[in-house]
Amino acid sequence: MSELTLLVLQLGFLLLLWVFVFAIVYALRSDLFGQRVRKLRPETASAAPAPAAPAAASAFPSAPVAAPAAATAPVSHAAASGGGTGELASSENATRLVITSGTKNGAEFPLGHDEITIGRSSDSAIIIRDDYTSTHHARLMQWNGRWMLQDLDSTNGTFLNGSRVTVPTPIPLGATVKVGATTFELRR
Image 1: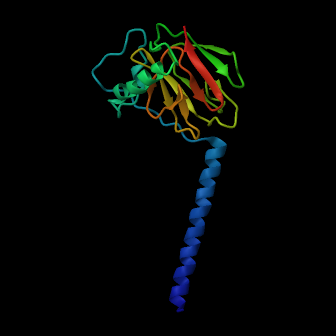
Image 2: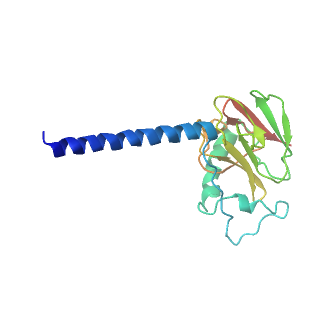
């Protein structure tokens, strides 16, 4: 082989080595500090927020405008599968979050109008320390007076009545929400 070919191969292997080093550093950073939580822009639609929840519209992303309509399909499936009452949790009828299984089994958290983040991070509203929960795992937020569940790109996913949540989804009262090894429900 010529010297030029050897030089090109050496530089190619060196570049590949650095790509692997950066991939390892990124994976370690994600494991230690978690993925960055993206800030959502307030919705710019002309629909006014419900009077009971003035800050609710600012918690929902403006890009997927059709997401609430598309997200209602899993809700009907969830209600038909026996989980939940079929009535969607709202600021009027849902007053508490009750952990039904996991490390904090039996714990209750009052629901206000603020969003609730769930994860291992100390800045989460509900801290769940288990091996299956991401640093910033999921978020409960109000949108137009209804409680919505959003997965924050968690490793193991967030589940509503056994179905994985991929878009912000309305939560029926009494439906089982699974985050890591912990399950909870929104109740009256």
